[in-house]
Image 1: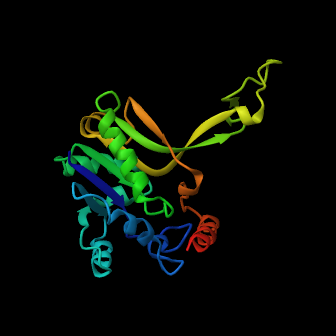
Image 2: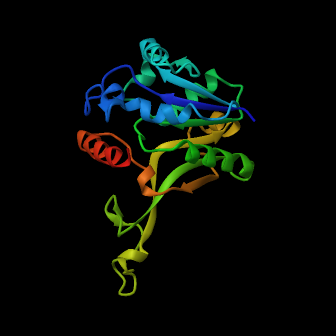
Length: 224
């Protein structure tokens, strides 16, 4: 089975965390934390750096990441209008010779190669009953969304669960994987029969803000 791993890395700087992907994080560029995990994936995994800027790939080649390939996305797919669904679909259309397409993000600095392999291989075993997989953590608490309660009934006397029993799954945004037919049909990274893959919260870190960046520094320094 042929597997393509898409690693989106914008060339332009992040607004919230300047130069985020290449910013120093505990002694090495932020993006290297996940890339170092990806290097150890089996040979049937083809790893693509997906960027609008070829100098991103050149930097990584110079840093010794010779295994990776380069996919140059069109400029629009690096804009704020584009999301993860747009990116994985354009990637699959351009690189059609794979059975499974995985999308992983370098901002997931604590994500491990073993988790990536475990999730993708689980999807491969479960196809065709399931067409995609994504990482989640289990959280607890009462959730409201768009003005209404989601996981309890606040208008019924017996509708109030104990908070520890009001569990829900939260996407980590670190990894998504989907079979070829599903991504080409739906244009999305989660298909119609998706599998949530539960992971420990310590592997769910995603850096989006400077507060996240500082928290990642503390976590990684403790683990070194």
